Length: 134
Image (cartoon, rainbow, N blue to C red; front, side, top):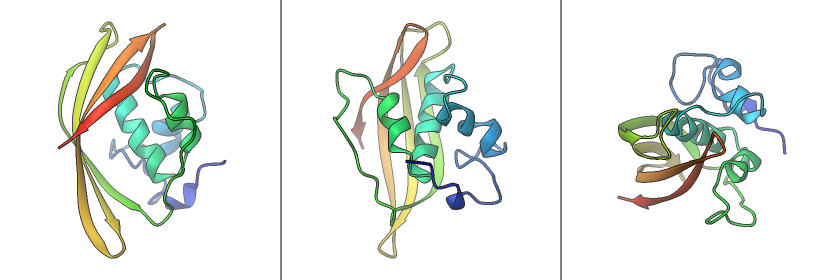
């Protein structure tokens, strides 16, 4: 499945990095680079939800907790990502956590998904393990 880039606003990256998607999360989605930190992986995964890229989400999900498949709801409109805090998750760390709030609109209603996500680094690549919804 090809990401739905029509969901981007003026080509800006959905992770709100102030960069264009192609130079930010897009390079991770295309497999041209791996996210160097847990925080950047979390941002790129959020962007994958925005552009409807389940293959990237599965590819960056740790095999110990990854589902066999996933479907994304095209009616879900992800609006904004707020990173609340990070712990560890740097280029030399083995683990890290990222707490975030992802704002969305679905069925005409606004909502916020708050989560503390856990990440692990294996063979120099970061993977999402799981998270606690708050």
